[in-house]
Length: 132
Image (cartoon, rainbow, N blue to C red):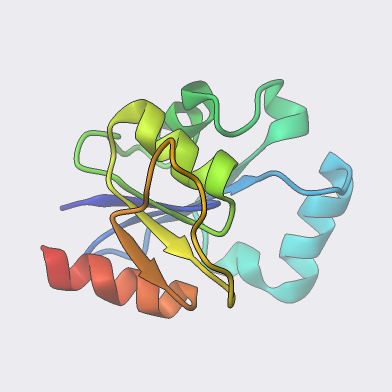
């Protein structure tokens, strides 16, 4: 099984275990309220909020924290996200494959590149599943 960290979301292929890395312009309490009000808390096993963790993406420690919180290993993980620096740069720093959610943008960073480029999270997860 593979661990998938979606810019935020850690997901193990073949299971319903999800974890979220939250790096948002919201307070820790606001992120938790957001997850509960939208019902996302029913679909994720746990989340790591950068403000609470004291570390943020692209620092590899926050990805390791997310994997630990949902009892997964980073070995074999994929990172999916829309931030070239935080998500794809974080994956590159850890030597992990990545999927960039382009949201209509062109990739311009020469320091690293995503393994796959897609338009949304569903396409990202599909691309990873197809690569298995």
